Length: 436
Image (cartoon, rainbow, N blue to C red; front, side, top):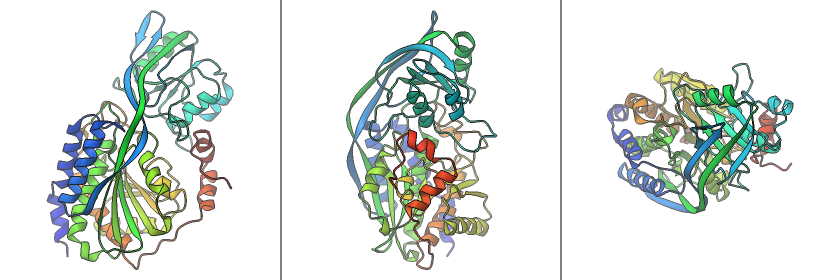
């Protein structure tokens, strides 16, 4: 009964797939590298025993990085474009809004200015403010350009997309700068005219989702998910090569335990997550939500030993995660709030029970994520194997016919977002899906 644990703790299937993914190089949405990585993932799922491994293609807004710079005084400062920034130059007075909290924008006149904000929020603030929320506060205020300043030391400019589902290319040029460059331009040029120049290739493209199954042919399925794409500036080992490696490792372990599955397990490794959850949105638009029992979405696993589960107010999911953690004496943290920033969300927003599984790093914000430093050497194979054991057991328990977790009414999800002060930001970024 426990042989699968030892096999998982010594397996190289997931780790070897992670190495294959980071060795591809550029896995940007719509790129040849993303397609090659999807094909590798399809083949890896088939090799570990999953059935009907296949690709499903869809159209996306393509975007490829060119050169970018900030021209200030007689200097040129290093920066990188934020994906889906328009291919434009803009000039305006530099204004440093610090954290870029909603109240910072309410108190400032940013019309025609180049707005710089930090990647983090203060420790006393009651919620995370996403990059796109800060960007669209700047756009709403009439800013000429947007500068995203890393809070992590190390000369690491951050990336991360802008744009909305309805308008995939952003309204004003947007770049990321390192903490050090941000401090320099704030010190030397705050209140002075600067120019933000972005070169980018905007084009039509395609992406693809990877699908496979295990278990019986039931009316319901448990979705085990991740995303294959990554930002082009790094290996994307943590975000999210590790998540896709986890899906492969879980598929290998679940293939050994297939006769224990009461409900089908449907593996989906999405494309185009980093540019707006495009792959999962595409799948959700074509899904029958009543046929999804629950989602186990892996995005941010393996970065640290302690697993973190956003449970979105589903008490049964919270209890299941804690029970498995207790059985294996493994550290976990459960977060009951809504987490609308990964591939579970296109389903959970309509009441489908779902986990967003991450891991704690001890760092504020993304840490090395979305920077050049997102590389394989930051991860440990032991963490992948240990977490695969927990998540495999959790999936078997969620798939059990005796495990019950009720779907929520979308109004309940919307009310929770309002109560958690997340609705305002989602409305300004175009991510609020409700019309009731």
